[in-house]
Length: 312
Image 1 (cartoon, one colour):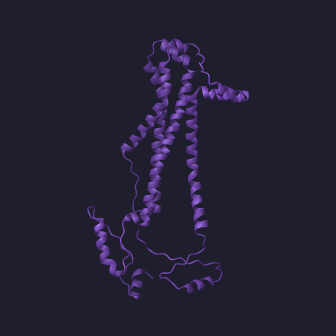
Image 2 (image 1 turned 60 degrees about the horizontal axis):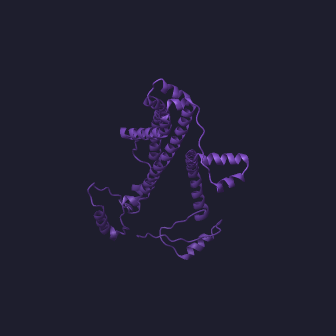
Image 3 (image 1 turned 135 degrees about the vertical axis):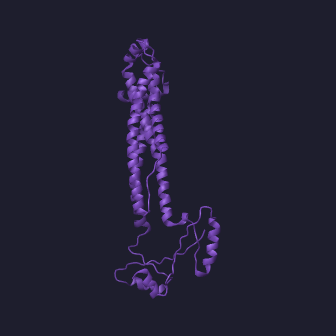
């Protein structure tokens, strides 16, 4: 039966259990709640509450909060990894073309010209990545908007990103690329022509300390070479360790979410809610009803539960 026919048959025509109010922009929400509660108290009203306590709105707000958290954590990790990769690539390129840099400087090329030449490598990567990232980000934005509109039954949800959003994303990518290229460009600019044309001088190593040297002697030849290489180039070693740590953090975060969701589902349905069926009554019932339900065919165990609304 439809709603109108059923209401007329049970003498409940026009009756309702829930009411949703839309307030004006300048309305005092607390005053409206107090007034409505006073008027509906004699009809059994349980108290009016704001949209922030509605289950559907809370689901949506929590989901948006999670997206905001992801947007503030994942992009910096990606950018730091990109800075590390650009720095490694350009540093090796400058070291490989050391003699060419010295030759160009000997022929009169300015430091700014040579520095900008290597900075353009990072700029080219930045432009390509920005165009691809903006295109993919726009597509993902439209896709997520359609998913949220379908899941939460929203009347309309359009993805909108203004020009400032795209410009800000490009500037952030540009700053990351320039930071990655800064060390290599500075090294190329500081090279003197005579020094660059000559083979690189051996690095002057300071002694690592008698205690450390004694411990290194206990290692085999290969391990000792690796340890000395790490200790004698601390900046390079720290950069490598940082890059690997960021890459692993990114991998762990991407693998964490599906595992965490599976764990939540397992705890919820295997530990917390172990029942196969739930029977809900409109009113509180006597203990004999529990015994009657327990005698139903196929029922192994029955556990009573009382639910009550509480204001904290």
